[in-house]
Image (cartoon, rainbow, N blue to C red; front, side, top):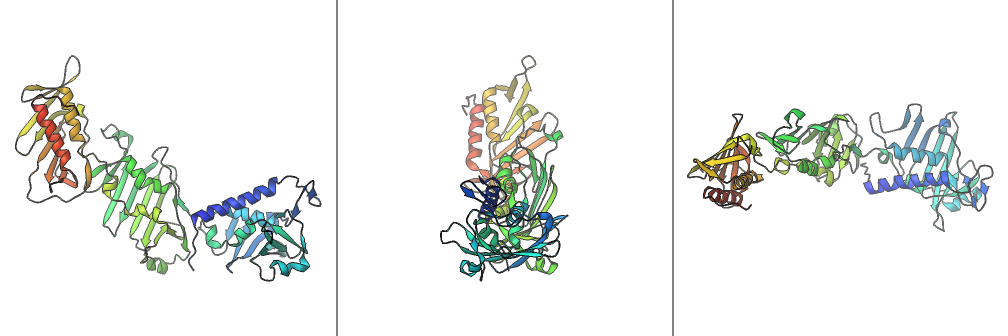
Length: 465
């Protein structure tokens, strides 16, 4: 049977149990002895130390049976094998509540236990001691006053009114104790992921995102990562956060789908050769890898490498599976620092314009000329900015048999040359190519805006933007 753990209910239950324990520890006027002090009376329902107990057998409200085991090596649950991550922040309050329970109401005689629902209990907890003895706790009905539920320790001769935390834990099954957090990589304080690869075999895409080494941070790009497509692109940091990294802080499952991770079952679920694989290397937490698949009904499944649990992933988390290059790539086709360029050549489809850039030997200010005539430096800088802000918009294929309406060539002082071309696709878009290759389109209006500035700059007009 497939089990689910709804996140909101899971968190609420944990908070409820923690609150119950806090009440046990700090409830005013509680004392040892007969359990009475001042205005408030506290009655000890159970009083066992963890060292006395080797297991707690549970028959929960759904009729499921499982065993929580306490040992020197830690806490485990039968049915959740080695390597299954347990939510110990939930397990430990449950154990403490069962072993050190209290009541704040006058106990009732056990002779009337049947009236309180003990003949058909909601749940039964059997505490197994290291010496072989057992103690049975039966959880009965809600009280008439709705101030709790009835609990009967069979060896006490009394029925107690206990808090609703007992009823909450009575609803837990094995799956509810399994940790739903698959990864918790927070990038808000600085980028610690050095590499992330997302392969989507269904879409036929692969994103290989690499953090630039410090030695490369002198390049003119403002971004921290590069991503490979047909070539290497800058990846926009804010887009990486929005579409990928934020999903890892944390990557949380909606619930456990199954603990059957046999090869046969994984093949049936599409996880043996998964449609999508995410892997990354983090400076603090090392390497991690996840397999993803979708069932015919649209359910998204995920399995962490080395963890024998198949989780169901909420749609919000599954969104990262469909991330494409265009969603994370830098919008800048080329961000070349103007101080590194000595020749800026523009071809408008008919005529070529060559701008020479030099530094004034006395002042160090930028000097620009075109065809031997001086060009206003402030206007040229605005023109240069217009070239840098012809933004990539989306994916496109190169049109056949068409010539560019704009070609911009950057001749750098170190001898490198970069050529950007804009080839019309339709009346709204131009295909953008850098050094002959590309995957994106830009708006034709952005190209026309640059050409307008070019002609104004050549004619000696001052550009205002």
